[in-house]
Image (tube, rainbow, N blue to C red):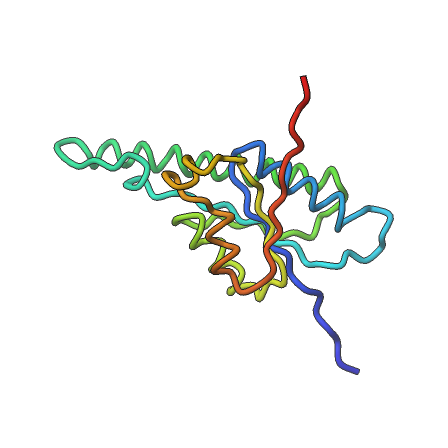
Amino acid sequence: MATTEKPVMVVGIDESEHSIYALEWSLDHFFAPCAPNFPFNLVVVHAKPTATSTIGFAGPGAAEVLRYVDVDLKKIGARVLEKAKEICCSKSVKDVILEVVEGDARNVLCDAVEKHHASILVVGSHGYGAVKRAVLGSVSDYCTHHAHCSVMIVKRPKIKH
């Protein structure tokens, strides 16, 4: 009898509230503790930017600054994954793969989809308007056009005052 592997869900996460919400929403809707067998294997991926892409300058002393920036980026990555691990454990999801991959988030997430043969990619939406999206680029927009799987963009509900 052949065993069938569960499909893989990749969730992209950074330090934003939007990506944390997307992870929590995914866990609440697809990894309910009352269900004995979760429908997906879960992979949580954080894209760590390169130090040079973060500061974008060169000159005397740049190498020293780059070292400090890289150390800070590694600490942020570790914090993000620790937070993701805590959230998964609080929702009784213990079998999760956590990864930090250096590079642009758009490419890192699309590569993670390929690497893990994911069926679905989940990303949060920052809710940028058209101008900010055009200037900053949209990870979710890029992934919907380039990832070789379904892409779910999770939006945080607007808080009413």
